[in-house]
Length: 365
Image (cartoon, rainbow, N blue to C red; front, side, top):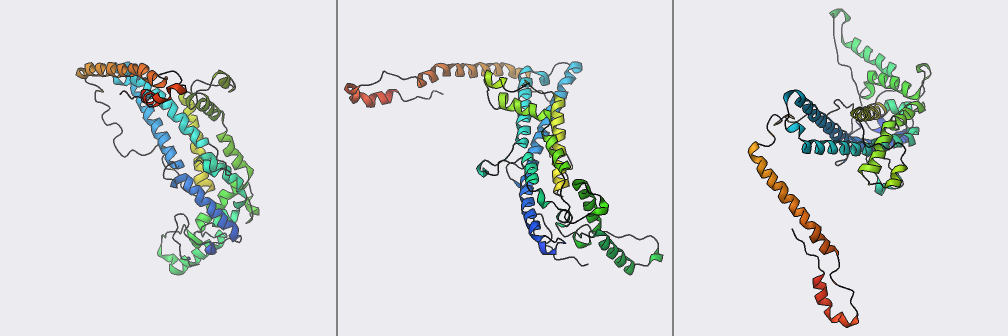
């Protein structure tokens, strides 16, 4: 079968009319949803799920590298890597950053309140469940031009090859098509994948087979893991909000922090859901590298002294200057916050202009 004319699309190569699908209306709706999910996964310029993973896993790797460097001080002697002021800043920033990053990927998005819509992994899983009726076998396999009957397509391909080649010529090879109506091998793989997703025996396949509960329940279970309960409680009660004593008491088992193994488990589960959604359910990209590939030398200047000895005196002076300035704010800002005179009565109305001048806040840098 000759391939149809491809169309210009960021996702699709073939028109709906060129797809081996009986329910074209459902395919149109599926494509619209897939384009929306693709935008959330990779297209959103500010907060795509892919970029969220990039930032989360890069910062995790960077902190773990710095933490490993601190271990060397036990054998090599103290250096800037174990400076308390830097260590506290690194550790607090790491925990807060990871808790916020993980929490963002878990946020729910209410379709009835689009003005509060968020880009998250949980949103895609929820929306796939809400529109699971669009995930039929024929749409899953043939959404972009692949043949539903892959065996017939293979027979055509073999017959065409035999017509062009002499079997007595010895070992020969050819490229197999992976797209369009001749992409029988890809179609075969899609059928096998949907057998698993729909929990269907391959011997009783039907175009109307639908996505089963097992895969969606499994994804929900991964996103409901206890580690995420702990992360969200820490975010809501400690990091993002300063919850009071009563509020903190409402969170059963509220933790003061998480250990590295728990952060690693959170990343593991999120990566699993990402791959299952992107490459499994949506037949999209397979993420090839968890941690982004460095575009520069990530170890640049790490072997250099953080501050030369001769500069420590200057840093001490800067520290004291900074603290003295902030101490001055305690009185200056208090003066700006407090009224400068008692309430006026009618007899003092003529002095309003003068009083107005007196109570104007004055910024003291």
